[in-house]
Length: 319
Image (cartoon, rainbow, N blue to C red; front, side, top):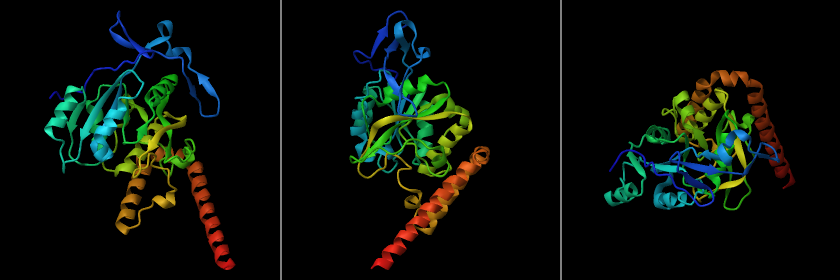
């Protein structure tokens, strides 16, 4: 089996076609994408080349097996429904306890899916291994949530609309609940609000040194977003729900309130504190520059705590 990721680019009628003169996939798009408010913005001319066509940048879909678990084959099949014309799938087999059977590996290899092996050293190590082997200008980690078919395409459109964009992610819901609020820098300073299955630029990954493998899974994603913010990249959230959480795993790391996410045991709490302290040290200048926002968020949480205490006390008195 070849170790190189598959280079085949999928094309879909009405979205992309092969350019006979240049031998590359071209992508005609007249879609609008949402900005940070309620209005929709038409893509600027920089996105369009000859006759409103532009070469579609390759998007590498990184699938850590430990993230999707028993839904591996289902997840891979669902990725085939994405309407974006140029993708490759790089699967990271990081579950040493139960390696993939040879027949499964052969089947994936025959379909152009690259499978690389990585010791089970956590999500950050698995993502770094997959991104090192990918060939796309853009990459998206896949966490096993159900992705709407146009998600990758619309994320690419938004990314290409702003050269400073570093992260594009879609809204998500859980079992029919409404999508979570949009991106908030104030919230991001303390808790991650960006889903794992977001679109990133591969050159940014190289610039910031990849995901920090010293951190546990959730903290590594939070830290990576903070380092992109630290180098001046922008974060965009697409309006609407593009990810649907499967039961048992949150699509968005920061969906729960911060108090709900603090680990219960003393050891877990120590690790949690250690990871978040490292996030701040890794991005010390950014936190200093945004100290006012950080303290606003802390005081907001203190206000919520005090309000909850008053309500509990009032409830106790009414009994």
